[in-house]
Length: 609
Ligand code: C2E
Ligand code: MG
Ligand code: MG
Figure 1 (cartoon, rainbow, N blue to C red):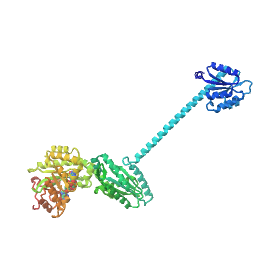
Figure 2 (cartoon, rainbow, N blue to C red):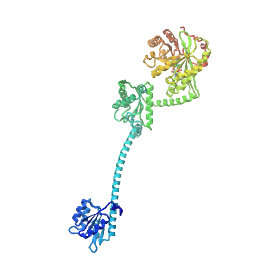
Figure 3 (cartoon, protein in one colour):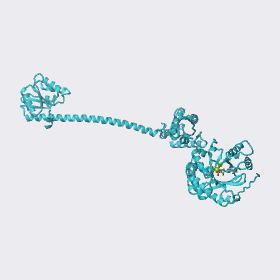
Figure 4 (cartoon, protein in one colour):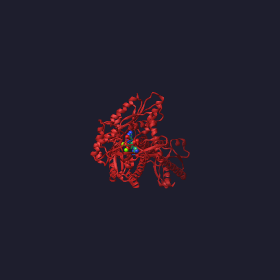
């Protein structure tokens, strides 16, 4: 066939009869095969091993080594073992076909040669051989490809396994501190719950740690330093861990500890104290010494617990209780905490409804000028007429309103309402000194960015002059963000709106802010006035506050005056203004309208000043 001729297949003819050799070689050369000849088996073997032909025509009967033997030897060597061998036999000769095929021959031709038959048989074998080689090559390629693919797939599997491991880590590990995360704890707490169901005596505890001042650190030092502190905290806590205790991070500045296999509750308390001691030292970050306070909630596991979330929630409630009680301490969970939280939740819902349904109203408490015995101002105090619980005092709902942000709409309503009321009173009043209005402003409200523009709007609407407004804010509100506070206070000062520091003496300990900020008046907290029973030691604080205010060109208001003695004492100190049940309780508008002091301002003290 054309294909093998193009490739010029080489054929080795081995025959001891020269005539046969000549005849065959002539025939094949005419067909353009490359022909090599050998008359002896040994020579043929040498030649075949040196240059393996594509096919061998092999005479059976040769002296020394016959065709069968040569065939065997060719089949033994890797270089020649696949070469197709066609035996040559002479008709009439004994030719053992079985042996010929057994030693590896593939065909035979018989003398005298029929040229077409010989060529056909040779071509047939060459093609068969070519096909075999092709298959072999394909198999090799295939094998190589399979191997390559196998390696690729193995690498892929390793990669996937690593990714899987990473996912597993992400799922159970906190990325910042590398501590176990909430998911890990949920799983672990499930095991604790199961154990306590099986062994009634089994004891374990969960500690919930929350940093009290972390927001301030993040706000003032930035998140990068904040993160570094969060990484330092576990380094402090880990050495305190006892056997079978586990530390994790729930998120933010919240850490959690599981104390498994507890001997007794005292062990958990001892550990909490140890934590507090370890955390008390300053954290040296970026050449600064930073002090952190932690509130810790403890919950003891018992058979009642069915879900890990209940444990976390109760530990959290205990932690919040610790915060409420003054931070930097620990509290052990009890049922009242849960009831309290539930009550708070209801209060929050009711507060939202109350705001929509306008269940709030204002009462006003007179503020008197001691020197003039005259009404000077009113403090607007909010009240809530709850549909089911009757009257709720601000002390009970203002903190919830602050936590939920509802203080913003509520505070705005107070501002509008009290200014409207002031306008009415000013219009009905002929006294040369206009009555003023003191309005309490909560921290969030003070820092809301449109506070000043809202006040401008209300002033424009009610047409009252700004110097009739006196905003009461607490010391801690100012210190919350002194930069922003300074800006807002400056804007209020430009409008001549007055600023009072409410509950003075109960908040921030540093007095340096009084120099920096434009403050007009200090309201001495009721708790100090309370102590004035007669001239005793405690009253020195009141005296000091009055002196301090006057030295700083500020006026002073005493809150919560209930007795004549208190009033007299304050008058002697030169206190400017007074407010308290001694003069009047906070009153509704109708009650105030019925009193003549609003019209003539004269406030007749029952005592002789
Ligand atoms: P505050 O601003 O210090 O108000 C004075 C509180 O002392 C008022 O309590 C008032 O009723 C009470 N008080 C006045 N004189 C006497 C007295 O002689 N004896 C006694 N025992 N108490 C006296 P109230 O109305 O319960 O308000 C409590 C706090 O709630 C206020 O303290 C203020 O911080 C807050 N609050 C009230 N209304 C508002 C408001 O509209 N907005 C904001 N943000 N807070 C408000
Ligand atoms: Mg006040
Ligand atoms: Mg006060």
